[in-house]
Image (tube, rainbow, N blue to C red; front, side):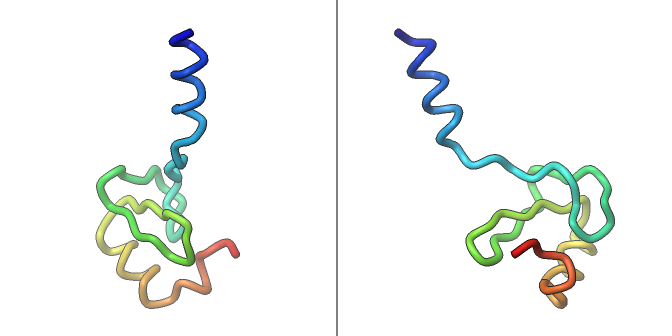
Length: 61
């Protein structure tokens, strides 16, 4: 009973990206940005800023 409940909740939660879309390095859980209803994660504030200035270059539509 609890296993099926746990799996349902686990699958319902949004998956966080693991790769920084700007530089390709492993992303940090704490540095994120929502863009067009998608969560993007970054390895540093520098990459987050770069994405914010040019989101069309790095986002997947």
